[in-house]
Image (cartoon, rainbow, N blue to C red):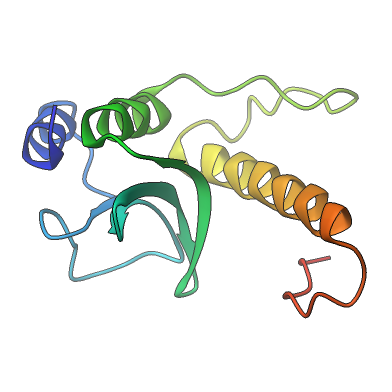
Length: 126
């Protein structure tokens, strides 16, 4: 699967709120938007929030990145984190985006702790 196949599959599924670099870049962009874009020789999948790109995962293979993106965008609501009640009242893409953002920040915090204090990275949202 390449980016064009991915866009066609998402369109068939009735989804339009996403960004695939060079293939599907909506004129109107909501505050949070899942994206797939090329970064050098790699493919990045993540969530763009207020103009900032937060990468969830990177891939060396376009097919693997496209399949991951498709599953991410079309999958059912992920289970809530331990200790958090299920959010049945807010199903859908926006709810999943919030979960993806939390997971991305958790990954970022782990990486930052591993690098040590004073690395000059951005502060996570409170």
